[in-house]
Length: 258
Image (cartoon, rainbow, N blue to C red; front, side, top):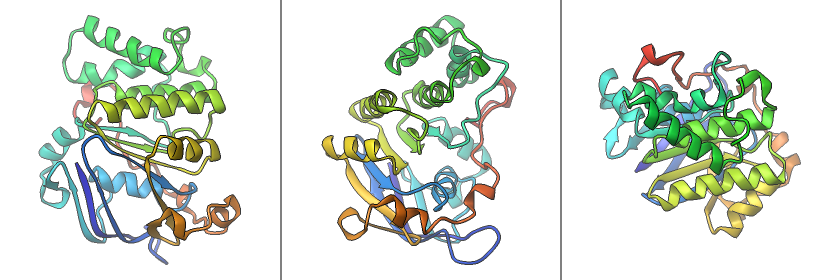
């Protein structure tokens, strides 16, 4: 479903690469946990995986297609098969939680009754039944993050990439997010989860997810790297100063960018 071959991602302002010689293959129904603190290149890696940040070297293939060889129209169609949970949640403040989640299906032209029903189901999976009709600005940060997870899953995508999807969650919220991502894998999606929350890492291990570590710009086997928070924080870059470059629709009129 997705394969990275010797991928290098340079920092947009120069200096050491954010990611070097990354090799990763995730197949249908497989979930891979990449342990990494925010600020170590995860957002750039997510953007590269959907063709928004070109790799400086190497090759990225999604569903058998080399991203560098796709025209913009083909890339937009491919993205409809991918669910993204970005660190910058990109939710629409003028819409309710339910309508934020339904937006990708609205873009696809599905009937309103179908989009609402599907959005309701996914929100329920993430413990947000009571919050579905509330405006986004009435929700807690943790609830907003789970809305973003629901939006990523509402299309039942073939590939899911979640960038620190539990950073705002307590133990209960983390369990809900992990369960929803696991469900996507059980339905056949290839899933990549990036983060370093201890609860998330522990749950990934309990579920038997394959784990790698992004450390010093390289993807390494989990047993080769010290997973202490201090070791990650010492490596932080200025990645948070990079504007969000993962595209999300501002309305149904921006169809195709989800």
